[in-house]
Length: 493
Length: 95
Image (cartoon, rainbow over all chains, first blue to last red; front, side):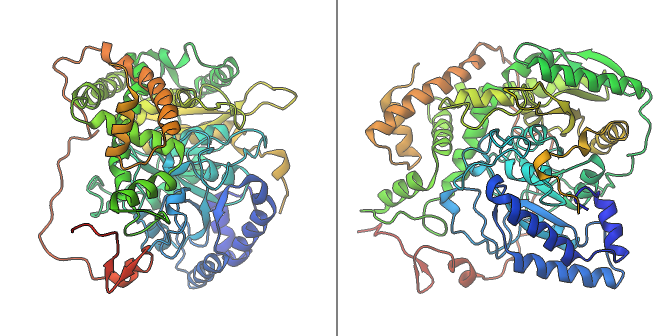
């Protein structure tokens, strides 16, 4: 059951072999057993989840089930869900009960899915290890001393530990793909504009995208079918014909041209990750693909560009948190300015404050041209590199992360060290392209501990998610990395 | 131009973040390192390049100037730190 695909679960629900209530309860029991240590979930509402499950069972009984009806899905705590505490894992929103649903949540509700609970994340999505959460770190189910990645660390850990059938995440600089890689699961960030950002608490508006996280590309396709779609309340939501993202899964890969950017296989890449990724590429050649050497010369600037643009947008987005209408308000203050300054200083964690300050600085008078505008221009150069590359190949591949999961606390007090772990994922957000990560093996054993998961990143051209999912699925038909489960969470049901 | 402690304090003030002297010092060190990372950008020639803020060539979508939202003040204020008579309470702003 815990390893069943979404299609198989749906069939079991339809065939009355299990009810949604039983399935939901099973996951709630597993969460009770494993979550205290992993800390993947920070909010559960069993009554609300089971009520949704009962409604789903009715729909199934009446023959009105859709692909995700009755399926328990974990929601990253960045999506506003009506009646649910929605915190972005910040003290600033620790008491915020959302009065409305995000569009993505509405989509899942309409599909009859069950909201299983809210998952842990880096505070306001700022982080690559889930260590900045106000509600404590998340442990990687493969090694309890290691990070799950971030910012969607809770969702990644929940999927890996089989604490949900699937989960949602968001990705601004790699926050779906990198934790997916570090936790040995599959995750996809769609083309910018495909999923609505209404109700998805904003970090960097021109970069943020919601996406699915699950155990296979096949599952991701079903989830994306539910999550994607135009929403007039999000001014950046794109109006396009509805797509079935699962439509091309079965296509053979003969003649597929895979671009390998030389910059993604250069210094900084850990040799065990390189080995696993090389083996994955070899598998793809066996499937009929051919490899093309490409270059993304401006990709080395992704990190500086991102750490100007994202903090700039964050400083603007987070200015709404002022203690007036919702969220944390400081207990003591002499006047209005003090109320703002103390509420924000006390409500936000250190990394969030750092980024707000960077953002404020690069947007301020006298610095805007040198920093923000400059970064926006380089952003165009980065996007142009990809456009040029896609003339020579169909998809681009490489490692998702330069290393496997590092240990909790290892990156220490130096934010820059943490920022460098986003080296392969960030450019994709800057260009607005779709990207995904799938499991591709394990790295080298370390200090007596077995090797940790390695992720293969697949980057597509704009709106090419169906092809990417096909490319991922065909690999998952001939390999079983995506079926592996961390030893301590194995309990067959 | 290197970042000074005064820059840090000014930025904190603009961002409405209170900072103790110690915190300002720590922030100064960390922000200086981060700006070191960002400095790489300056060497790149971007003459004639248009800034990019959006991947697709789209413009702001407009809609009819028609009221579409209902009044949910009670619901929205139920989660506010301090309200009274439908108003959000804050320290006195105007003398």
